[in-house]
Image (cartoon, rainbow, N blue to C red; front, side, top):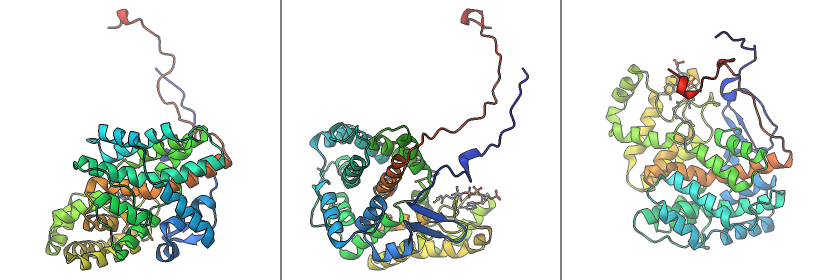
Length: 381
Ligand SMILES: CC(C)(COP(=O)(O)OP(=O)(O)OC[C@H]1O[C@@H](n2cnc3c(N)ncnc32)[C@H](O)[C@@H]1OP(=O)(O)O)[C@@H](O)C(=O)NCCC(=O)NCCS
């Protein structure tokens, strides 16, 4: 069967396609910069808090002291989840933590008074509630699957500290809380990443925020998006000792295998988020008397330096995995921590999409057969 294939400009994976304007975040890949609403990620990681950065992203400006106080209070007050949500988590507790989180967020929709409402104000209200409740779902699931009861949120702790407390059962010290806060800040938003794009596609149909976030979470789970931090720690454990790094990498290069935590679809220079977690990993390893993992990863980074000439540089996942590992967080929760950070990023992008909406509906070039003759099933060979 012959066919005419139209000449179209095909942009596979939508690479280099601009589909909308944004004021949320900008990834400047060739020089390794990341900007949230005009502010450099380094300034925010060093000087801001997660709560303040979330306010910046969803409201568009840095808060005054009283705005921040109010915002922090609304997040703290929304942390608890209903017993019905805990029951849902119990009933799916053996699934992957990201599947449990996706199911939990779907279940939240059933009880949210604003679910169907897609106005800016309602989306913001829901966004605050979902941002506050995602850590509670992740932590409740982790405890339930380990045969423990979920811990109620502690209003004396900030977002990052309370998350660690509900997850691990111990109140973290100030440095650890600050490090987790930094980790959440640097993972909050990242231009047109695949999961934020998925959330925008859902929102562009005027689907509600819960639906858009479920689309984002489902997309984030994929190993090409959220999964590399897990891979980095597996690599460090396989290497086992700093003396084995060179031989391990040589063997990988010989087989043309990729080194986890290096390379990025947009950055051709060092991922600006990596620096903050590198320092955090060093300090945490020192404090815990476990310098081995930092030494192994530092040696991997050093040995990979020649790859930088080809634009294959260290990325954020390289160091975040070791931070989570040193905090005693199991590897299958690494993507869920990414979700705790990224959900308010979805909220910011969904708000932008709704405020100036156009249905996202690209084309697929059909290259299959045409003019086939339908043969009834009984007459097919
Ligand atoms: C993230 C990633 C998919 C981006 O890839 P990309 O920019 O689309 O680049 P490509 O996949 O086209 O790779 C380009 C070249 O660099 C090489 N390369 C890319 N990442 C590499 C890595 N981590 N280690 C070794 N070589 C790598 C590829 O093998 C390819 O080489 P070739 O041209 O000789 O075939 C890729 O770098 C990767 O798989 N990294 C490891 C996983 C990871 O850390 N992901 C987290 C991202 S935040």
